[in-house]
Image (cartoon, rainbow, N blue to C red; front, side, top):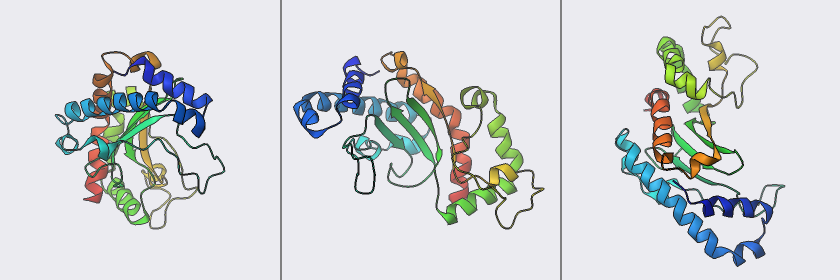
Length: 220
């Protein structure tokens, strides 16, 4: 669970996204950061029992910085207004299928996973795996818990035509057009400060694990 003060800090930061305010409230930031990192450690420990490749991770390998890179952005606000962490076998910096947790009050907390915009070579491998094993792939998406939690894969970005090398009649056509393979679900604000938060995240990650395993197999 998270402390209410952590969510309060993020809500206040959203209203005061500037260095002067942040520096004046650095003690609150450090307390909120520590609280979030403690949550991440609990998730690593508990989900590591389900997926051993996650269990060896260090918190620092998973947690993203709150400081924004504004060099190439029109939005010059210096700080993210959320805490986030990525979990995969290589840590957050390795672009490999994995899990993601985004904490943002106001109904914007998100828990999910997959792989977002893999490079061309990896995307080709994933599409080939889906084409070769489409029945297995669809069985994962149709699994009862998966459908209840996530519904469908998110169509973050998609080709208008099927990729070169595949026929329009391919039964997997709509999935082969995808450029990302991700899904997730929202977590309500009251759940963030409840004792069941870690259990809820672990349950969500467990439901998505068959998809992660399928995607990872394509790249191994």
